[in-house]
Amino acid sequence: MIEFERAILECDGLKLDLENYEAFHEERSLHLTLSEFRVLSALLWKVGVVRSRQQLLRTIAPNHKIIPRNIDVHIQALRKKLGPMGQAIHTVRGLGYKWNSHSQEASPTLIEGFTKKHLVENSGYAV
Image (cartoon, rainbow, N blue to C red; front, side):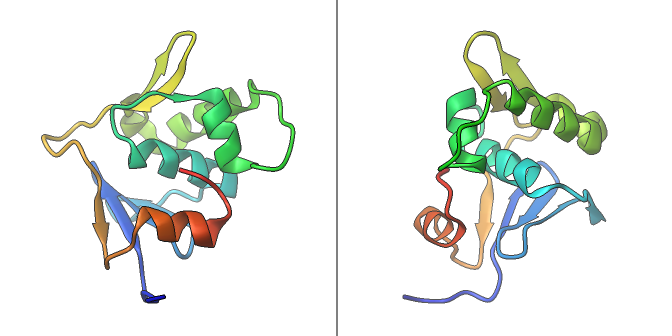
């Protein structure tokens, strides 16, 4: 298996360091909890695609029973921490949440050859 020094997911001015679980918006640290980081990365992996509460729950706690409404709390915290950028997180009533890109580039950019498979294998959660 090839090891990469650093894996960065970029989308709409956000940078997620997938190895160190750090998130930045325009070089400013967002100070996200691990659960918030995982929810945000799951939304950014599939820009414009609805992620159900159950999918997001499996992202933050794959082996635990958590009330689906807990995701709403994480989404609310993310929107607050993201400021105006938080408007990109859209609620799809009765279904879940999705990230609507502000830029022409609708798909995130992955730096350093990091793969989705690598994320799943090394993080313990599904995206």
